[in-house]
Length: 366
Image (spheres, rainbow, N blue to C red):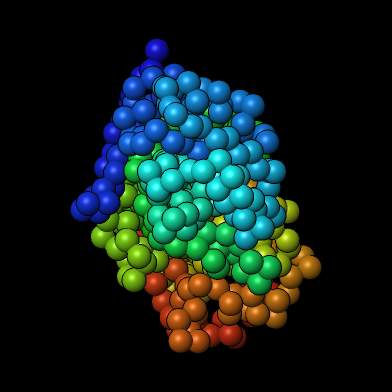
C-alpha cells in the first residue's frame, strides 16, 4: 500500500514542481500518471536498475499509446554525448513527438542524462525523475541541473531544465549496495554543513541508523535534505549566487573524478574527500576550529568514506583540473568554505599557494 510521507514543492513560478517522498510510490497507479500529460512516454534506465523497477514504473503509467524503454549501460563513464545520441536514435526511430514525456528511473547518471535529453529533444519535452539511489534522491533529482561529462571536465555540457515532478520511493534503497548508500549520505551531510548545524548534529547522532538503512531515519534525512536544496534552488535557480554553496567539496571532488577516470571513485566519495579539504582550508583561515575538522574526519571514517585524495594526484594535477571547473569565472576559481558549521560561504580569493599546501597536507594526513 503506497504511503506518502512528505510532499515538498520547489517554488519556481510556472516551473514549480512537487517532490514526493514515501514508500511503495511505484505501486501507486495514479500518482505518477497524473504528471504525464501526453500519450507517449520514454522510460530511460540502466541495465542494473531496469530489471528491478521499470516494470513497476510502466504499470504505474497506465494505458499509453506509445512507451519506449531505453536501457543504458551502467556507469559514470557512459554519461557522454555518445550515449545521449543513442537515446535520440531510439526516440526518433519510434516517432516520439513534442508531447512525449521522458521518465528517468535510476541514479544520478540516468537522471542527469535523461534531463539533458529532455531539454534538447525537439527543443524541450517534459520529464519526470524517479531516483533510485540515495545520492540522486537528495541531490541530482532536485534542482534541474542536467548534463553529460567531457574527458576534460565533469558535467561540462548540459542545461538547467526542471522536471515536472520527483518521485522518491524509499523502498528502492533496499537494493542499494552499502558503498552507494555511504556515498549518498555524503551529500546528505553536506546540507547540514552548509545550512543547518542542528541537522548536522542530528546526522552525527543518527548515522549508525542511517547506515543500517532504517526507514524512519532515512525518510527524515531525505526530507530535510530536499527541503534545504529546494529552498536554495527557489532562491537562485541558475546558480548566479547563493546556490553555489551546494558545491561544498565539489570543486575538489570533480577534480578527483576527472583525474581518476569517471566511475573509479563514486561521486559521493570524491565529494566527501573534497568537503574534508574544504573544511581544512576553512580551519586554516581561522573560520572553524581544528576540532570541527577532526570531528568531520571521524564521521567520514565511520561512514566508510575516503579521507585522503588519491595518492597519484599531486597538487599540480589538482590545480590544473580545478582550473577547468564550471565554477571558474573570469579566470578566478570560486570555492565553497565554511564560516562556521551550518554556514557555507563562497570565496574567490583562494591562492595557488593555499591549494598546494592543502593538497600536499591532505596526501599525508589520513
